Structure formats: structure tokens, C-alpha cells
Length: 118
Length: 505
Image (cartoon, rainbow over all chains, first blue to last red):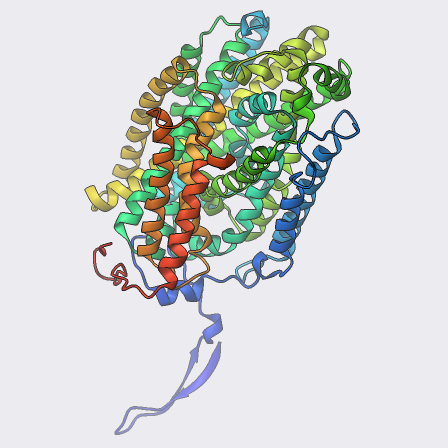
């Protein structure tokens, strides 16, 4: 809260000291049930969290690369390869890529997503 | 091999009976815990879910009859290349990381109850809203149908064929409708907690048994090498394109399931939501990978099954291990209950989501705007009961037409995925307006419909030209129109002023 001096009315009257909220202390907008209003300036002002995963530059490129590598396009059709634990290597590569994508996703969820109402 | 050979006995039926009564009790408790008669309280549990409930409701809803029956069946049919299912289920959470942070923030501030609240707020277009509701209800309706079909198989299995497919469907639907009508999202989420725990135990149990009995995966592979070696080989160029097509179709489509989006809205806090999604990212490495292995092992033990029969491979694999000991008997009973739990937890969430959209986004807006929350809740319940009646009939039709679960999954996702641009582009690109969004969604839907329709009317035979799903061809047209329609300087007549009733497309 801040204290400010407000001039008295013209023609007389004393100045008075009032307490006001700082702009950043004003409560965030919170509506219980959306009912059709569309203030788009407010919409775009409110949309961005403090921090979000898409701001991590390597997030989407890394996921795309792993997604592409999970598919054995680089091997000839009909190729099997030696078996490990009963499965051919191209299946293991896919599982490893999926695990890495899961790890990256989990990491950005926990570390790269923050907002001001926590 | 058939479910009639699976002799689970009366103990299993008693266990299932106790489980179903438990669900009804939770429904009653959910009703008693309702704080107020509002849409938010009924459809989002008052946005009060902490980590434990939120994570388990995400988990139980995401993994359904599709996973434990349909995916196993598909793995059986397709072989090794269906390992793609693990990647696409992880990608679902990854795609959520793109739009969910902004959507969650908007939902908190502006009070969204359904995903269509966001769509109307963002674009202000009534035609877009209506088309979105239609596509989402189509998708969810199909999704529930998949669960009903899976329910029929599961109940036939657990009762050793004593309870028929349709009787099982009707019985479980009635239980589900009762507890959902009583307590809404609270009951659904609390039953999800029980169902999620059963599912987790069940999946872990099956994985353990499969890996340690009858030589596990290596023994299965040795047989497949002799009988169907092509299932262990890298697919052809068409198969590779289909692989990429499925990654994109399912990654994008499943990420915008309306009932999953509503769970984002139902989180008590950002911290809870973050932790739930971070944990969900790893779940496919347990459940989906398990489904893949079940189908793979079934290939070695039960060769020669057709598309519809292969949806039963999980039941056949369980039948194979049940009589090993008392321990495996009860494990199989738990697993069956887990399958039924997975199915019910998904079906009830999808049904609740349909109820919320039909009441809030259609009935309240276009039919009776002055409705009270109590009236809307009643309408939602009536819609739910009527819809389920229709879907029970469709379950019977799908049985008669021998439609496999994977067929139904595709039928759902290829249309629902057409909503992807309004989320993924909509939350980032201010310039992207209602007209290109609507035209893109409509064009994408029509392209998909034409390709599917052509197969139905025997004009052509392939629902996936060049190995790429019809829905993805539609989505390419969709995104193309969204982007070009935004970048090109066309006059946009779709902006709706805040106080006006709605714009024209």
C-alpha cells in the first residue's frame, strides 16, 4: 500500500492523506464462470505466464529430433538386426527416444513453467 | 481360444460386485461433498484437486480400454512397428506443455468450464463454437463407444462368458451413470483414484508375470521369428510414413481431448498441475509399453487371430497364466478389475465432458440463456443418459459389423484433431482470427470425411493415402488455410465486438 496526499476541493477544504494500492498489488482478475465477455486487450494481457516451456529454446527442437530418430527411416525395409532381450535394436532405439522425450517434457514442466499466483 | 475357456469362477464376480458397489458409494459421497450447485462444482469438482487426485484422475482417464485391449490388439496385428504407440503417448504430454501453460492461466482468470469457453473467448465466432462442439462430441462419443466395446469384452472375460457382451455393457453403463449423476466430477475423480490404483497394480502385475513366465519376451520372439518374422523387421516406406503419421495424429489429437483439458481446469494450483503432468510424461513407459508387449507375446502364443478377435489378446494372455498358482489367479482377477476400472474411468470422464459442452456451450447459449445452474445440471444429466442409450445401441452395431478398437480410435481422432490449430496457434498468434480458424477446421473435416466416405461407398479402398491418415491430410489443409488465411490480407468480418451477440463468417 502507498500513502498519497490528495488536494482538498476547490474553494476550500483540507488536503487529506489516503492509502492506495500499488498497481502491482491489485488482485489478479478472477472470474468464477465465463459468460461470453470478450475484452481482447485484457485476454492478451493476461495470457502469458511468467515462464513457460516454449521459452526454452532447445525444448521443441530436441523433441522433434528425438521424435524423428525414434522412427527407423534410416534403416532399410526388412532389416532386423541382432536381438537384445528378445527385441531388435530399432525397437530399443524407439524406446530410448521415447524415454528421453519423457525426461525432457518432465523437466520443462517442473523447471520452465512458473506463474505469479503460486 | 475364447473367453468361455477362462474360468475365473465366482470369487472374481464377488470381487467385481464389491468394486461396483464401492463405486456407487463414492458417487453418493461425491454428492454429499458438493459445495454448491454450480457448473464449476459439478463439472470441475470446484477446481480443487490436489496432486494425488489430479494425477490419478489424469492417469485413469488417459489409459483406458483402448490401451489394455485396443493397443494390445493393434500390437498383435502390426508387430514391432507399433512401438510407435509408446512415443505418441509421451508426445501427448509434450504437446500439452506447448499450450497448457497459457490455457491454464486463462482458465483461472476467466472461469472456463469447457474447452469451448476458450474457443469462443478467443475467436468470438458462433459457427466456430458450434462446429467445435460437434467435432468434440463426435470424438468423445466415439471414445465412449470404444470403451463400451472394451467393456463388453472384459465382462465376458471376467464372468467366463456367463455374462454376455451386451449385458455387461448395460450393467456397467448403469453403475457409471448413477455415480456420475450423483456427484459429477468429484465422484468421477474419486472413482478414478481407486481405478488408477487398481490400474497401476494391474499393469505392474501383468508386466511382472509376462517377463518372468514361459521365457518372457525372448521366448516369444523365438516363435515369432519362425511364424511371422516380418513383424520383427523394419517396415517398408509406406509403413515408415504411417509411423510418422500416427505420431503426429495421436500426439496432436489426444493432447486436446476435452476431458483432459477439463482436468487442467480442475487443478487446485499450478504446482499440482505441473507435477501431475511431469509424472504423466513417464506413464507410457509402463502402461503403453506393457500393452505393446502383451500383443507381441500374444503373437507367439495365439497366432492367426483376425482384427476383431485380436482385441481380446489381453484376455487370452491372462487366461494362459491364471492357473499357475493361487497368486496368479488373484493377480488376474485384480488385472481384470483394473481393465474394467480403466474403461469406466475413461467413459465417465468423456460423458461428463459431453454433458458440460452440450449444456454450457449449446443449451445455455442458444436454447435457454436464462437457465439456472440447477436446471443446466439437470439437462446435462438427461443428455448423458440419452447419449449413453444411443451409444449402447452403437456398441451392438459395432459388434455386428466387427469394427476393431483401432478402427474406432482412428474414426474419432481424425476428426477431433481438426481442433488442433485453435489451441496450438490460437494461444500464440494474436493475428489468427475466427474466419481462417473456421474455414480451416471445416475444410479439414470435409477432406477427412471425403476420404472416409469414399471407402465406405467403395469409391476407393485406402483410408490412408500414401500411408498417411485421412485426418492428417485434412489437418495439413486445415493448418494451411489457418496460416495462409491469416497472412493474406483478406477482409475479416468475423471479429465480434464485446457487446454484440455474434459475428458472421
